[in-house]
Length: 599
Ligand SMILES: Cc1cc2nc3c(=O)[nH]c(=O)nc-3n(C[C@H](O)[C@H](O)[C@H](O)COP(=O)(O)O)c2cc1C
Ligand code: SF4
Ligand code: FES
Image (cartoon, rainbow, N blue to C red; front, side):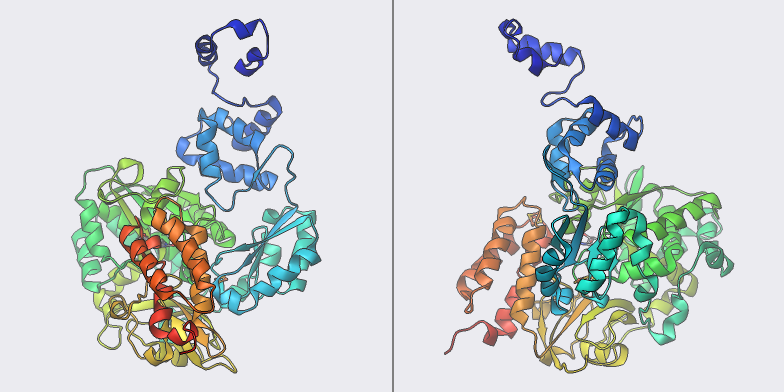
């Protein structure tokens, strides 16, 4: 009999609440709603007998969410009991992530969820029309919802049926994907809709084709000398100081957006006390960015080799790889690559654990990612201390973007001068631009750092799309501002765009044509930030929503918007709130004619 049942018993009601609580504790019960036996059995059948680590909470939630197409409250209560956590703890985590749908006791799970990407590139390719038409076509059993960029902008518009992306989607292709999905759970039939061939043409710079050939499996990677460097470093045949020097001399900077020099970060973390941990960032949530997915689908082992080298040089005990949930196909590729590596290791390996995001852009921010790996809400931490000192599970942590690690093998083997030898307009190195929008050939373009937008479009993207002339461009996704066509000759690189109120970030270039409006792009970005704000800081939580409302007006209230921007930049904890005003400010600076009234 539970404490609650006892309370409804008139005899037991004379027992004091303290005595009741003590009795409950003695029996090892948690407070609040108690799990029912059926729910507990269902949960145990999915997650296994335990004991379960607290930090794996999100992984366990995924098991439930996948199997039941949502998180039933009864299952969450049972899960809390299995993990000896309070219900509040489990609910607060489950409710943070967009890919978890909590279902009340009477709620029915939708047969299928269709997420229509309404990120900028998809919006420009007609996402709104899909969102308007699909509910009536697909019927009430299918949940149709908008979703932020799913990392396939070069194939816009994109809809995701269950976990299977439908590329260059129209109502007919989404409908037929759903028809298959009603027979089988979408997760089980991903390959039926996912078309690797459609995602392959990533137009890598012709002269650099040997750097990243088409999809490479484990035997082929090893046959071409793959993992020889990692083995030499791990076995002590290659001097770690020489590796560190190569990293420094190459000038490689973190390719996740912040651009911190990679070699310097390795030294900083290596100098911290052991045990040291590593977190790999494949959250790739910045709208317009799809380079990490593209490289992962083609050459996962090149990345894993970079990971092994970094882990050895920095003295890492365990590695956590955090992959965004949207990359279902890439997750299968990575799981296979890891299994192959473990089955036939070229050298002793560190522990490597693959973690699955759950639909939250903010988890790409490094400290939010660490919280998420610990099984919590993805709320960025206040710094200092920096994660290099106090990171994952309180240990010094090396966090890297996927692509930063992807280049390690080539830099060390080919020599730092190989990497730094590329470059234009005084800049050095290589950059992988994710290009989408009004160009003839969108895709990932591996090009010299410092290239201008005009050169990028004309030399690597086949020019502007038919019927479009250049109007403006976003050089760094939703966060990096918007520049007008007259600034198409500015070198694109870290540090070159700041004087213009802009930055390159993850090098996600979205090209606008003469029929697009910068104000629409800025509003799209602001709504995205409103949706993705973790809500910790009032300026970010409230400011993004308020700004979005103000930006809907024909004529903008520039004074109020500017005040909002200042407060958000000055008083937000993390880069989301600090960068959110960039596109809006760009419009006021470079596209004022779109938002000013008649003079
Ligand atoms: C709001 C926000 C989102 C971010 N999203 C990503 C992301 O999706 N992928 C990524 O690698 N870095 C992202 N970053 C940057 C990370 O915080 C961090 O700088 C990076 O992972 C470090 O790796 P790197 O030095 O190799 O670039 C984001 C930063 C912010 C502020
Ligand atoms: S700035 Fe926004 S996203 Fe970042 S911690 Fe504050 S509320 Fe969260
Ligand atoms: S996939 Fe739709 S905007 Fe990126």
